[in-house]
Image 1: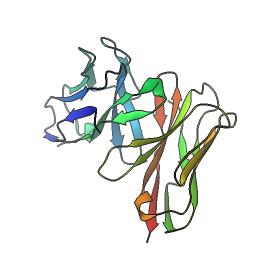
Image 2: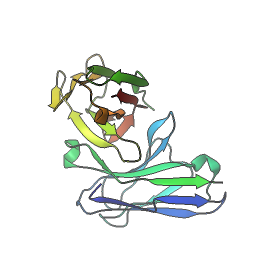
Image 3: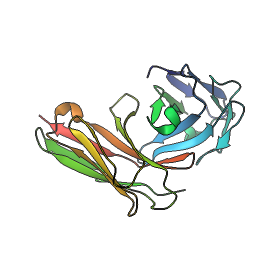
Image 4: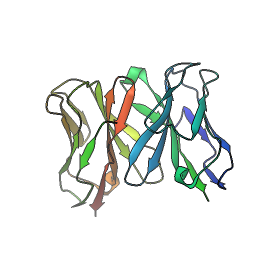
Length: 113
Length: 110
């Protein structure tokens, strides 16, 4: 997954706690995405950012906030974690205007208890 | 929310068998169709990005076709090998949004 770095890889939170998932890319691409992966549900888009300073909601944005402060970094924040947010989270960039498809980060496995 | 369906959900084949699976998607507002290979404990990796009706793409023993008018794409694997075991995802792109199927899990038995 060279080019897209996600941290942390694993996290356990208690209900109501907050945390921020970090994503950084070194490929100088405009578009960045946050997805969640749940069994039997496929990858679902939470938020995306088409360019620095812009963000848009995806399919499942409730309970999340994002921040794209610069071209390189796109963070996902859970303000008050809920068990329903237990999932695997992937950050991704789209290369070459989509010609090459997504490059995904290595994922963050989050458990909310 | 758009519906992208993949079938079958899972598949077990013997080493050397050829196999194929289907991705169905809306036939309107089509921009692109992606195929990804996803191995356990790793991240999805792009196989193909297809944009034109009738497109055929090939990478080694894996190939894909696209029919945008009827809304389906086929992924073929010729002479399956154990290392082909993975989940194969398709993603339908409309504008700047992508909708993923739930994947076909392939197990190749040596």
